[in-house]
Length: 597
Image 1 (cartoon, one colour):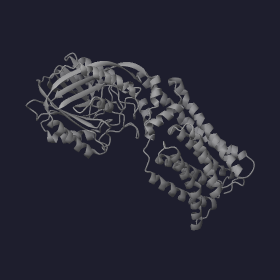
Image 2 (cartoon, rainbow, N blue to C red; image 1 turned 90 degrees about the vertical axis):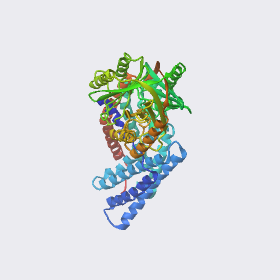
Image 3 (tube, rainbow, N blue to C red; image 1 turned 180 degrees about the horizontal axis):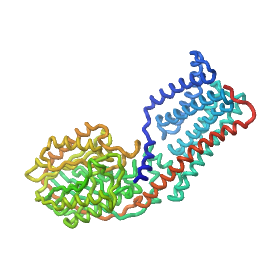
């Protein structure tokens, strides 16, 4: 798990961009201030005329070519939004400005340091090439745009700056040499990174980088081809329970695959897409978090077809009978079992809130189902996944937590409870605008004994990657305010990884918009309670084959990523510094004119 935490920690480098107007303002302001500092470093004078002259020179040399390059990229390649194009222009402009200032300041003490200007050209060229090629997926035109911005900055430097060489051809030659050295450095880095990836997974670092970025930025699924190559077929289960009332049908679906890895890749969208496919005007489907870890991430979104086909097969064979139910709870250590039994079928769910309730290994889930099926004809086990703390500890076979889950199930099974005729009701909303909620929105199932509708059970399902412990407590408390005699109120999440696409892997509900989340949840519970009606029930479970990343490949991917990161931690700064030193060495050996400051 420590290795997994290290690999997942890479996602912290992916951040949302600020608004374009803020980046534009920062570019202009930093250029004006930097230009004034540049003139001060060059001349040593600190007067208004000198500072304004430096600011104007930097505006022409840095800001204008940055904006032209960003504008051309956004206009000619609609794939790149103006905001992203401006971000590239901003960073490259700041890069040029930084090295201009360093060259001007240090050349007073060591004349060859003036060649740091050309180091800036090399670094900026590398930035444009790598961003366009591997982040924006402009495989062919990346070189053209990178070269165009290089020539543009060179032209504006010659036209508007006091930093110049006597021969423009000499300037251009130095710019090209610097860019060439940094391109060589780029391919050296890719070579270092490709070793473990090629050896362990048969993949190229460039393909992985571009595929990862295309998913993160554009929602494209190129990485699924790589996943398909390294994935493996497994046998798993999908189960479905269905209630029928005069208002329609309520379906509970528990697929034993994991809703990951992130974005729209693999099974990340399955909680929403399956619910949509299995719902209609009179039917609401709720898709729960099965007992699976990332080992059971489907390799592609096409794997949903096998799961949906199994649901259709089960549904066609349902034989509905009047629903009678019992509800009881069991606990052991930090684990709790919420045991819902309908007719002769068991639907136990598990929680460790407020402690972390991360993914449960498939083997642990099978053991729980097998134990429940010694007392009932069929069982579907699911994980509440309802306390996001930032920990990534899975519940694996042999762990203390796994035995606590088994003991809590034993406790629930040993409890006595009388069955009652069952009423069911449900409600749903897309929860648009509430942070931490995916496309599946919020869904509520309400059950109650016939004749005692004031003692309802509420299963509140959020299509989310988790929920903070405080938000869970607040939601439960808000609902209980209106239903003080409720036998059971719990918040569950699907653990969808649809949301894991901008700021890392932790995107729980309740971190923002807590009041709006509470208000909507209470409304949905009231609607579900108001729809309570006598129900009939049927349930089935079917084995199905899907292609997933698999336990060995998941571990291999994590180990390989960590080895690549470990290598690059040392290789990147060494290669980068070596490239700078090589550029300064080569340019220092070139005879002819020297830079004038």
